[in-house]
Image (cartoon, rainbow, N blue to C red; front, side, top):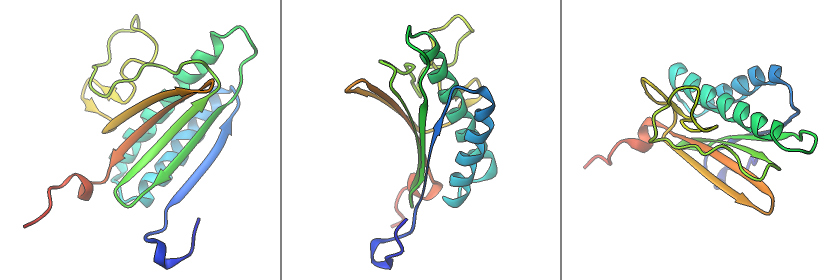
Length: 154
């Protein structure tokens, strides 16, 4: 974290490596909730992005379970910016769950990962990005702060 005041507002960046242990999901929600609070998001919105992050980690662990090799770890990075919170989940799996902020969550028979960031009540996050490069797969959840979503005042 930089302390140079000429670089703009300070951000919090928390990185951690999660071994395959479902008990660590509560730690994921705590980390993401902390970053969301620092960004000024409400408790409810912080809980929403925390739930989406925990679901993405759960899905990443499921993807690791399906591989023939021993399960590896998942890297979590949570960052608060002046206008948004970003949570990235990265793994050595060939693909992470297909997540879409627009697709509604369906029954348990859907493909793994569909609907990360969605509930029947609405979006938990504003954007879900996916990429796979050099054998590493990454999903990034983005939640914008209210000021960033508001149109500029005239």
